[in-house]
Length: 227
Picture 1 (cartoon, rainbow, N blue to C red):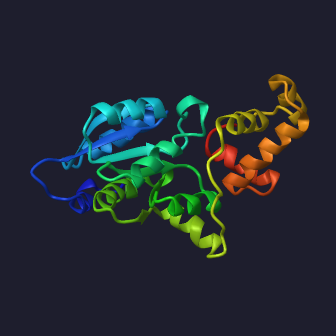
Picture 2: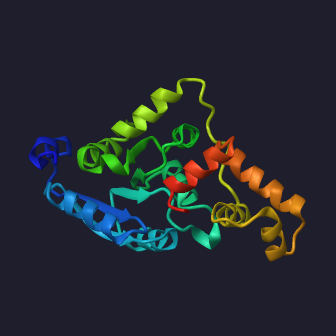
């Protein structure tokens, strides 16, 4: 494990520690992140959230400087993950800085995040080594990529096209059922829709996430914990 003393100097020196909200749908991840931040004595966790709705409520009631959030928590009103909420934060004036925690290594998705202003990315495999540096970068409004995220983008090269957007709530629901083993026909029966409609929603989700092949679908679903 990296010595905390070797990296804590990267966090800004101030009279008061940085106030951080940690959001992840796994309690063990929240605990690990909180312990790592507390150990620096320059950041303090002022709130935690296990889904996008809880994060939105924390932001309404708790002042903070930086949000450290998982990308793929359950979303608001069934929508895809916490992405929409995080995008709103980075686009608005006066909102906390954002550090994205993720297991996603799909280059198209990572590139899409960068295009949407979410340019401080920490792969969960890099948390111990990179989180403190990422928090410091986010607070300074500077971009930062952890080691695995940087490697994924470098392997893809400059030709990697970003993902095209965020799936709708129904598209995401269809996609979840599909990767969990239901056929297009079974999903169509469940929602009382045509096979053609369900197939179109599945393809739309793949396009928005930058997924081309069924292998891409399986890999992405594994990365975000859907399978």
